[in-house]
Image (cartoon, rainbow, N blue to C red; front, side):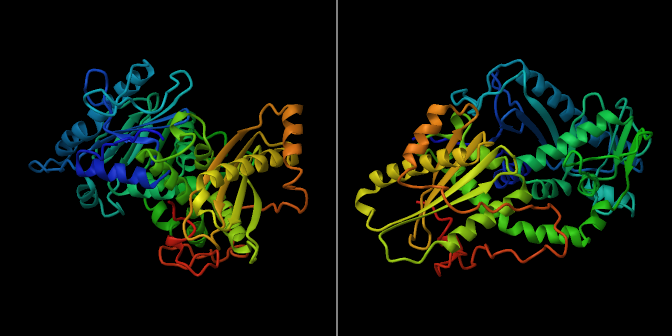
Length: 486
């Protein structure tokens, strides 16, 4: 068992909102509000680390925008100085502190170290400022401002603009500025590590490419990003494919128009089933924070949960569908012992998942022995998968009791690094698999998944809501069946 980790919940209401958004997204295990420096001063409002990506958040509490006299520009400059400019300077300082390699702690007494190591040489830093308080003033300033979002412009310097509600940021030292309206949008639309970091990376790439990148609200830039896809690189981008363009400006209302499109509605509809995958991750993350996880902790380095958390939102649909279909297809049998094994390709070509279900009657009196045997069987299945699919460099194993026959469940996870697969390992798992015969018959189904499914391919997702019947056909409610954990 690992020690329990007590995370700050945030000091101010807006900090607590940020912490909650992070907990509900991919950052649950990897985000920590109010970390401290060696001098017992706060480093930032929230620090998240996933592999070599470091996300530094600064959240200015709801600083009211007060109009002093009739000069709105003066009021704007005063608000911006406190809510934006000072935060940007502090964010740059936080980055310097982290790059220096000095220690970070979770408590002011400096007794609880930050649980993840940060490679100062390889880290990619994302500095994010969240500014609250100007929404109403933005909306009142212009009837064209749809949501009261702050306008952002990245250029050669941070010169003051002669009008309010547009922030000019130096493109040489970029930071990201979100506001009260678009912060929840960003965390709901980009709620996996892959999607969030890919968006920020594309944005930084555009900032470097163009002399000027300007947009009326972060949500409008997000809509532009979703609507631009480079098939040759298999990724979304910001800007244009034309080579003679040196500046890009995204107009007001792009997000408002985008969410009315059928392709967006189909995407959100198709995404519903994908959160089955998230629940597996969240359960294990919470157990890790509570100190109740057995075996290898995700806090100790590369783990199965880390690999699962890398999957993009759209690919989690296919993984979830495959897993739930395997649960449905588990054979109805009076036999005391029965197993079902499925292979699920990852978004990453050199990685795959093995999903093992077991039905074993009468295990309550020998649970510890049973779990060790199930883990050993899962390891053999992972080795057999590597022998079957030679291109794999990583195999992640997931084992559960067959939900059709078990009212509660506790998952086992295995990460098998197959980068250097020796002849001895191949022979060992071939011999171990002789009696089990994993992957000896049958063909693995391959599926192509699109982030924005077209109308011909779109279909209703399996119900996975809080009160929906579980897809495993056990007759139980989903919340109390396949995702319930001991």
